[in-house]
Length: 314
Figure: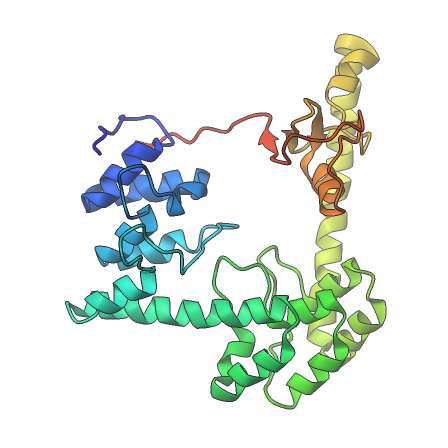
């Protein structure tokens, strides 16, 4: 499999990225990273007639710096223990383990992946509310309570807040020390997560234990209110301009049918309608599989950006 890299265009194609990484062309690793920022799904794809994904190749080459960068891409979906297609299939921990004696760089990569696997396992136990399993892991390594892989959204305390599991929180506090100021990947405190899920008693309890957590939430509220005021003024000006240019019909084209507000992050659903991303995502998260506009069953629930922002890669 070979592909020539197109200059000054981006993001690169999957074939181009795969070829660069397979050949270990380190001079172009920055291109790979910038492409994966837009196309993170490339990371674990295995093309026809190949046994490794891009992630497998990164690890087999001991590309520690690139590995650390790609796993920190926001919202990336990394399945650490996905097997290669060889016989026997190997995951990246096994590949790193086989190579860890080659050099200090390979050793560091193995240690990084081994730690990620432990954190990922712990985070999954927290997400699925398997508290006894969390306790077993904390008995061996107390530091896990305040750690998570960079691609995970929540720390343990946020999972407990989301599930309204105060009983487990109190039990675990006897085993370890929670960092009450930890923020989710989208910058929310545990109390903010609890308030979002209408677990008001647990949210207030957390903030009673940690005045710092309350102070962070209140600061977030002030910042959001200020941003909202700016956004309202901008929307009012835009609405006025659209009506002047084309009347209410023009305004309707730029308005989400769910929120009745001007688009900020418009996406297209398989029903052909355009929605504000947060509004339609909330609709889908509630388990709806039919169009909110036609009530016809959706062929898929993928959200396609209305305006694709191309990054210039040079």
